[in-house]
Image 1 (spheres, rainbow, N blue to C red):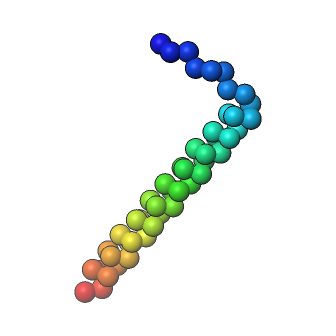
Image 2 (cartoon, rainbow, N blue to C red):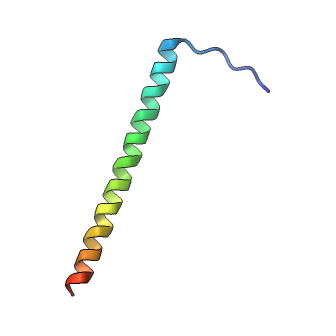
Length: 47
């Protein structure tokens, strides 16, 4: 097992922020996809 360099607190905070931003972007994409599917479903229900 390779030993990782012990990260400083600032590096950990920076990595955490990157992960949060990435997660937020993913959640936004999921939300848009769900909204698109809801819209398509409602259009089909109207016909």
